[in-house]
Length: 231
Image 1 (tube, rainbow, N blue to C red):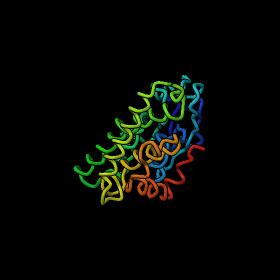
Image 2 (image 1 turned 90 degrees about the vertical axis):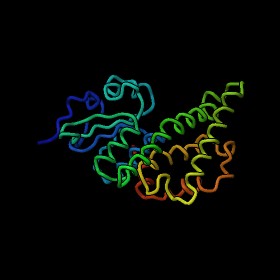
Image 3 (image 1 turned 90 degrees about the horizontal axis):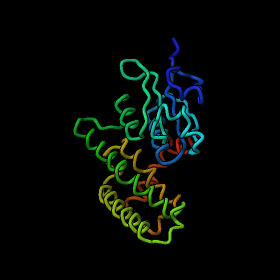
């Protein structure tokens, strides 16, 4: 019997072609790429729906019914816990959910699992918010603000966070040992520094491990495909 997703109002604006697979509502920003790359890496069947960052999409009643915080990405899994559909928002929560659903990309032991999750939290609580503010003050409306202190604050914090990552990657290909959802969380945000035009000001050329890490990440076929999903 086909999955019934009619209880999710978002499906009225973005109707599923196949309600039996994971429905992804996203846009290819760093947070969006995290989840599309996870779905590709895990080989989970899914259907992407393009949700632009315009208020008409992310602040629509249909989208807010799934994510009251009006941010992409969000998902509906028709085969959730106990066989019931589940809707989720927050990219870090979605990554953990997908990894636990498949038993992959989250470590092989309980100790490894929590080491992976700590780096997911590092990205969610530090790298994402700080790099996002850096982008605002370098590339977007904040660049017009004459006071240099906000911009300098986020430049310095981005440098500090990159130093943490650089140290963690010494002798490692991936941030928590094996390739994991921690890398799916982190690498797209590091790559976003290029989009912001912020690499020179955060000392990118002084880093050894971080640039190679980002290159290694995007060389993965699943990640390369996911970087433009939804398109």
